[in-house]
Length: 343
Image (cartoon, rainbow, N blue to C red; front, side):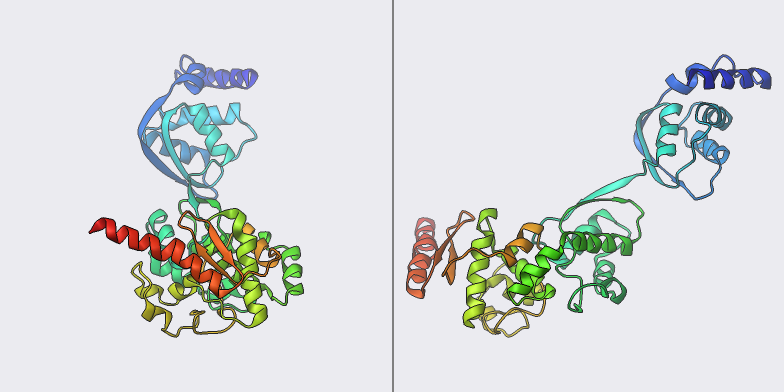
């Protein structure tokens, strides 16, 4: 670095432009304090001279662009500009800006998709992060045939295949690339081992993801996933309806107000497992890897029922009589107690 900068100084001296005094200290030590973020777009093929002039124009450097271009040339002779969206803030020296531009530290946004969100909730979340793309556009892309053609079972939409994870995207990433990345992440996590284990249980890949999504929605404590899976497997084996509320809710999502009513349980939709037998036609949410594994690795049990204890855990039962007792103990009686306290 020192030898390179000596060359910088020699050129500065030869240029007769009065750069000798400033060159060395300016490049490494002269900082600008940016209190409000400044965004800068570098396009493919941009020249260092043009970018340097833009840095000066945006007041990201204290001297004209020629200083920066010379510093880049003689301290970083093999570096290249990386195209992308950049955000500059805080204390910045010319040397630091050069490192950011040469290493491609583009401005990114972090998006966390938790396990169990459905595609409508994911679209809302993406809308808040990528403000130029409305929820309706995200939902359109989740039904795009080109994005779905490689998914198992010819699904109608990307429900269940938008893998829950934390993603970092360029702020100006194309929406189809965002959805495509989530789908590709699903593919990386949906291993051959999962598919083969499902096949042994007579589940095709789409059915595996569908069952995993139900397990994800019903699970409050991670360690219970295999047990909940066993209940659904036992019911499917015996020809019993799954009778799980999250599927009912998904079927009425556009009018769901947070409360599920008895009339909803009797409303026929393709997803109402109180009314239909077997699995619904597709997933109802995005299952994580643990739920995918649990769907094909159920606990060995004879349980056919479970009821929430109110703390995220469940009581499991083999027969309806024991289940009804648990419902009374953990659902009906506590509800009555709360009502009595409020009166």
